[in-house]
Amino acid sequence: MIDEVVLGLFRAPHSHTSENVVEISCHASSYIINRMLQILLQQGARLAKAGAFTLRAFVKGKMKLSQAEAVADLIASETQAAHQVAMRQLRGGVSQEIAALRQRLIDFAALVELELDFSEEDVAFADRRQLTALLHEILQTIERIKSTFALGNALKNGIVTVLAGRPNAGKSTLLNALLQEERAIVSPVAGTTRDTIEETLNIEGVAFRLIDTAGIREAGDQIEALGIQKTFDKVKNAAILLYVFDGGEQSAADLAADLEKLHHGNLQVVVVVNKMDLLAARSDLSAATLQLQAGGEGVTWVYTCAQSGEGLEALKTAIYDTAFTPAARQAVAGSDTLWCNTRHIEALSQAAAALQAALHCIGSGNSGELLALDLRQALHYLGTVSGEVSTEDLLESVFSRFCIGK
Image (cartoon, rainbow, N blue to C red; front, side, top):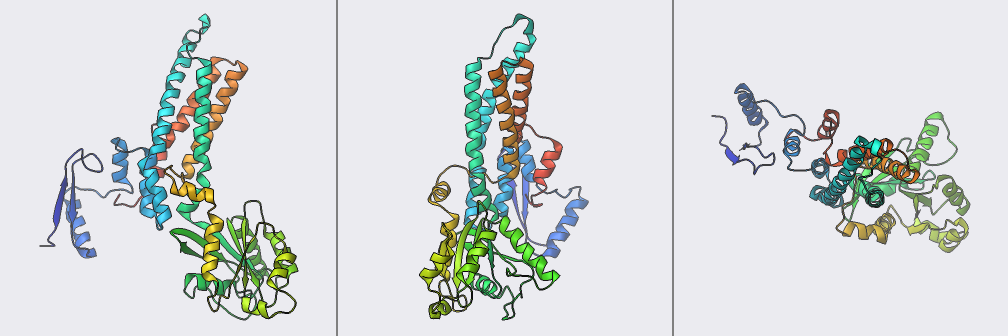
């Protein structure tokens, strides 16, 4: 006697894998589970590999490859937004749209291939005007999908948000206050933070990857110099910069100089005027004067006191509003799929390049052999998205990310 269990029988084709499946539900004791596995293995069973069950579902045609990948994203989702993105991908609406367009392209490609068999007769079975219209339609669909990637990827993996500023501006105190835990060491000694500290903050169901960095100044030693260089490297890859301004000590000129060094094309900037109580007591600099002298068009301003917690809710709102423009909110609230898989985007980009080459062939009046080659390439890359075209290496790469139980 090992345990009292429940056996659940799922008859084909109504199981996840379309096969006959028995599930054993036992008590959550590591000893019981391991003992039962030993007995099953002795009776001829074998341990499943990562993703083995979802792979069987894909092979049996229960789902497209892109939907199978969405299962892994669904398991890994830790926020409402990431869950929503995975669920939309799992429904497979856009995958079905691509599959339908690909089938129409297959029909045209078959006619072009047929022309090659009658090359001496100089006949055209594929209407070039209709083919051109179809190629443009597929390219528009690809561009629409690619336009959702930045938002979908951010919702899936978290929006990179870097805290930067001068030493002792209160970056680490602010990080701790936002996280409501003592995550970073806080000290009155300037230059305490030498390396980056990364944590996740959930705001309204969206993950923001907060990265605390070393203070920007002339480095006192080699280690601090490396930390400051890391600050600039992190800002380069960030979506949002929270520039923390010391309201008690710092000048507007320092702020303007730092923003000029840190800013890059796609970076959204929020200036967090910390120690707002000390700024109010200064005779040389008011809030209005600070914004006027520092400039920074398009910059969002928030006033906080990280020690007391004043202004933190306003800061969270500013972070969320900076990340999500009205257009982005409409996309999240809408019904369209937000694509977040890098493999899909790379395959679609390669398909688009082949489709553009095919359009060039048609426009230039090139031979049918070149057009057929371009169409074959486009069909291949479109097929790898949904799984109509797959290789052992591709499937190994996709399903190795799954847990054993799926």
